[in-house]
Image (tube, rainbow, N blue to C red; front, side):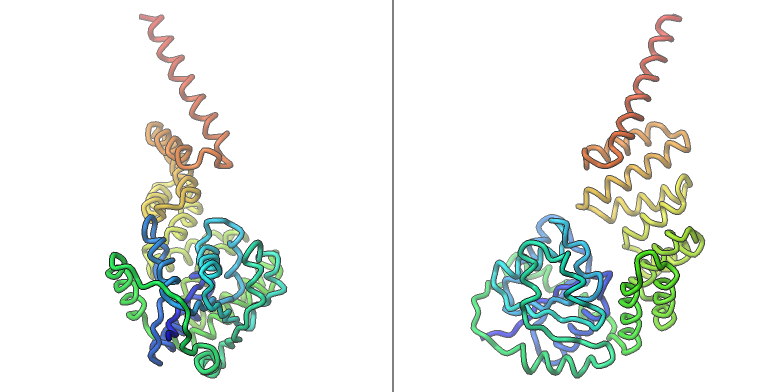
Length: 341
C-alpha cells in the first residue's frame, strides 16, 4: 500500500502553488517528488519520468497558462501527463479559482482530453489550508497500485533534486496572494496590455521578487514598446535567478546589436542546452549582432550553427541568402585579385 506523490506543474505559471503543496504534504509525512529546476537534457528526462512510475499519485497543478504549450509534442508538462496516463497513475487535478476547463478545452488535444474527467480539488489561494486538508483526507489514501522502484542509477540525482526542493523557503500567504494576481492577467483580453500589466504590478507590489510576474510583465512592456521598463524587470529577474535563459534571450532582444546583447545571447545559448529551437534563434540573433559590428567570421559561424540545429527555422531562407551572398562576394574578391596578379 502506497500514497506517495509526484507533483507536475508549469514553473512560470504556478511555482508558488506547487511549492506550497509540496511543503504541506512533506510536513504531513508524505513521500513527495517535485523538481524545482528546469528540465535537464539527455538522460535526466528519464529520471523525471521514472519518478512518475515510482509513485501511484500524480498531482497536476492547473492554473491559467499551465496547458498553453501542451500543443508542442516535446513540451515537458505534456510529456509528464502522457506518462501518467500511460502508466495509469491516479491523476488528481488541483485547480485554482482562475482556471477553467472550458477555456482550456482547445488545449486538451489527443490523450490530454481525458484530464477533464478526473475528480480534482479546488485550491483557493486564500483557503489553501482547508483545501489541502480535503486533499489529504479524501484523496491521498494508501492504495495498492503497481509501481516501479527508483532505479539505483537515479538515486543520487533524485536525492539532490529533493534536497533542492526542501531547501526552498516556506511559501507565505502573501506569495499565494501574489500568485492569484498573476493568474488574473489571463482573464484580460490578450490585447488589454494595460489591464494585464496592472494585475502583474499588484502581484509584484506584494512580492517584488516574483520571477514569473517579472518575466510576464517584461514581456508585456516589450509588446507596449516600453523597453526601459522591460529591461529593468529582466535585469531584476536575472539578479534573482542568473540561470534564466529566457530572460537573457529577451534582454538580448531589447539590446539588439550591442555588446551587451552578444553577452546575453551567449548566456542564453549556454543555459538552454537541449532546446534546439531556442538555441537556434539565440545563435541567429547573436550572429546578426556580430554582423552589425562587422565581425563576419563570428557572424557566419553562429548562423551556420543555427542552421545545423534547426534547418527549417523560419529565418532559414534569410540566413542562407546572407551566407550565399557573402560566399559570392568572397569568390569575387578572390577572382579579382587573381586576375590583377
